[in-house]
Image 1 (tube, rainbow, N blue to C red):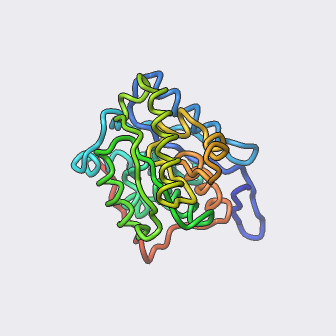
Image 2 (cartoon, helix red, strand yellow):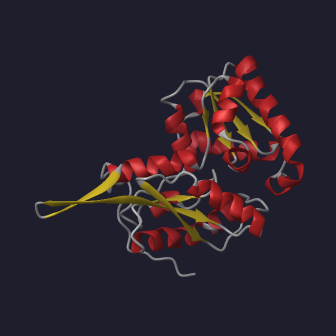
Length: 252
């Protein structure tokens, strides 16, 4: 998979570069996320890291989600200026994605949206596992925004807020596996979507969970990165009818 650009009659092929945008985390937590994102690099896809100042580590409410959008918009512009072929923000809140698509001419891929569309190729009854019960209302809002509520079999939570997961990793894993099993056996889910990347793929791997549950598991780092690379490799860009190009630039 390589990006193809044509100058005159000559096609130029190069490795696809996908920027992964990460906010502020404690150093050890940041490294876990960087290493996980880079693990989805391949011989044809290079994953690079861009930083933004906002930190989702303590949790983001509705006000914070809107307030941080300009920082992510700036990162998307930087990604394009630095020669990346596509860009993905960390986290399943799809921060700044909708506005960002009007600012740049490279694909801007929201992890939550990407997971839904990949899951739709693998099954038609989605079970969603979130971090903590308190974030489920926001997840429902996202699902409705993307028009995917009819695909949802059920939702569960592994029971810990983001900043508490590392200190309770074993208990989180136990709860997470039980939640997924409940969604499959009680609600009829045939695909599990992980709404919270710290659960998977940071602390658990999707292939291991698939073996445990017997259904596909779609997570929010590898899925959007590879979708971004696929769109770039196909030369596809966001519709300017849907996202008219804006000349606005965030002033931070």
